[in-house]
Structures are given as structure tokens and as C-alpha cells.
Image 1 (tube, helix red, strand yellow):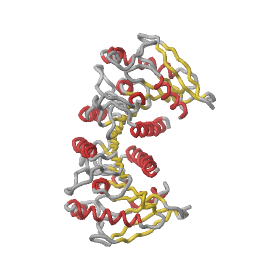
Image 2 (cartoon, helix red, strand yellow):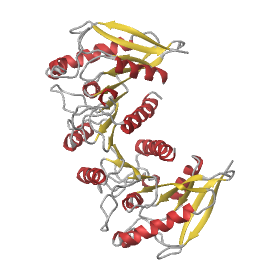
Image 3 (cartoon, helix red, strand yellow):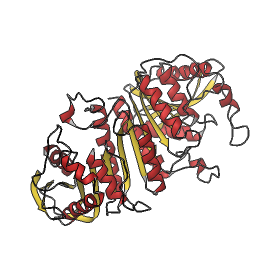
Image 4 (spheres, helix red, strand yellow):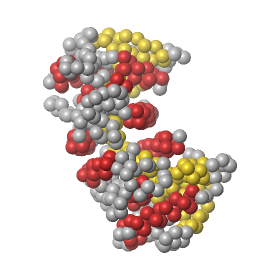
Length: 240
Length: 240
């Protein structure tokens, strides 16, 4: 058995989009599908590795693209140019998330009734927005996500189960924003968990941030390992 | 292989104390030891069941007694009589926790270098106090615990890893007390996690509370199952 990676170009508003889908090559039965939503930089190798790791767990995973083919950034002053456009148009973001989910759901050997999403940083916000907007995922996992609500009307109850993996020292989500998220998800009727990790900040899963000098934005191996374990348990639960 | 239950009477300030220890009968090598700290009612069958379930995971587990032999209560107006005495004398509580840990550590087939503690409600406070007072546990798990700090000088750094499983709607620990615990544990240098569960309150593991009519104090099966899973992973980590 081996893991296959395959480039997947799909359509949607502002597309085409280019993602990478990963799966076990000997799978012949329908498998749950997991969308991987990238951080601020957009679709990249780190997301493909996450997709491969999800494939090793028995899922078909699409490291998605919500910016558009070729639209990627690097750390630096322009890192957020594409993200900022979508933060300013959350309805467009929702449409692109839906297009990404449909690309996954319609891929061979994916069970369209068993879908989930995980995401990192801005991708964590994408996961929350998928749940808030009622896209048909059974579960979502946010890793050091961003918690501000969209400006459109969100569903209630939120049907997707949610696991929010949170670095307590994340400067983007200080305690009051985390408490506000808990309040929002409670009011929305979501089945939610927040796992807070001490001495971890933003980007705690991001191996490119091992030498970060931005306060509170740095890789933290314990939180990385524990949150992946929590996600593994969570996906087993939502797909059971 | 079968699980053995054995009454264990041990000494300490205000003792004797009477607990129940559980272990696999065919164990011949030293195993990690886990203390189980009861809720407000004191040592009882539910704690013995937890000890048995820990024994099934490969540990030797002592469902401890910190009130004294025969000192047990029932739900009702007098439920807290023994707990209140220890809440008023946290140093005495610490001494009894130490005596309980020593009783476990010196039991046959327990590796005294691999100890941990779990606790429920008041027992969650006991776990935190063990860590705060520097008792030699590698890890501690609080289930719907109580977070007020003791009046004695606590160690820094706290060496025990801590997992706090928390019902977000717990009326004993509203968000500001949970945030304060996170702050305390951060300042103490503890390696900590708080897992918050939406739509769960106090006593979410307590099967005797399935029909509770006290607002926010009720069994919640999802949080019960998820917190036990988190504990299982956590104990694997701390004993690795």
C-alpha cells in the first residue's frame, strides 16, 4: 500500500483552483473525505503533507486552494494579500469553500456523506465558516484558527461537530476572543470542544515557524503532537 | 487475566484511611500507579469502577480516601461536611493526598517513579493541589474540578503535566475562573492543557447525575467519553 498524491484542478467563483489530493492507492471502497484548509500563505507543501498523513489514517484528503491557481504568498509584508481579500468578502470565501468541498466529495472513492474539514490559522477560520454557513461536513477541526464571525447570517443549530485546538498564548486570539468563540458556538447549538494548550501560541503546528521571532507565533511540538492526536480521535468519532 | 480489587487501609494525619486498589492479577513487573480522588461524597463504588478501568489500561490504581475510614456522605444538605473541613485546611488535605500517594507507591508491583492522579469534582481540586504542592506525580487529570488556589505557598515550576477536563457550563467554574486557572498554571510554569466541552456542566462524568435537576450539574455522555479518551492518551504520554 502506498499513498498517492494527485494534483486536482477544480472550478468555482474566481477559479480555477489547484489543490492536491492524497489517498491510499489500494482503496476500492468509499472512504471519508477530509478537506485541508491552508494558512495565510495558501496551498503549499505543508498542506500536502497533512493530506498525506490523513490518507495514512484511511481518508481521502484534499489540500484545498481558496485563492486561485498560482496565487500563493511567502512570509513577509505581502503574505496576507489574498487572505485579506477573502476576509473582506466572507461570502466569497464561503463559496470557494463549498467549491472545494464539492471537488472532494465528487472525487472517486470519496463517500459524499462522510466529509470533514481541518484547517490551520486562516484555514481554521475557514473550518469555522464552513460550520457556520451549514456546509455539509460532519466535523471540523481548527488549529490555531481565527475566530471573528462572518457578516452573513449563520445557521443555527450548527450541525458540524467542532474541535478547536488553541494555543493559550496566541496573540491573535487572546482569552476574551476564545471565551467569545465558546459563547458563539454554545448559542449556535454546536457540539463543540476547545482544547487549550499552555505555553503555546499561534502557529503551534507550523514547522516553518521553529525559528520564528514573532512573539507568540512559533512552533510548539507538544501542542502539535497533542492536537494531531485529538484530531485523530475526533475524526474517528465523527465518521463512526 | 482478571482485575483484582483489594481493600487497602493506610495511615496518615486523621486516619486510618480506607481505599480500594485495583490491578491485573497476572502482572509481575512494576506498573505505573494512578491515584483516583473521589468527589464530594468520598470513597465509593464509582471510584472503584474508575480504578478498575485504569487497571484494564495496565495501571495499578488506588481509589483513595482523604476523609477517613467510614467517613462518607450522600447527596443532600450534609453532602459536604467532610469536604468543607478539608477546604478549610488545605495543608491537611495536602498531607492526606501525600499519604494516599505513598500508600499507592509502596504497593506491590507499583513503579514509584511512575505515578499520576486523576480526580472528579473535589477530587479534581485534589489533583491540582498535588501538582501545586509538588507531590511526585508525573501527571494529573482533573474532571470537572474546582479551581480555587490553596492558601499555602505553591511550587514553581509545577513539574506535573496537567490535563483539565472542563464542562463549559459548569456553574462552579464559570469562564472567568477557568481563565484564571489557565493564568495560574501558566505563571507556575506547568505543562498544561484545558479541554473545554460545550453543553456540559459540572459532574459530566457522574452517572449518578443522569437525572439531576440541579442546573449545570448533570451527566453528559459525550464529554464523559471524550474526557476519558483524552485521559487515556495523556497517561500514555506521561508514562512513556
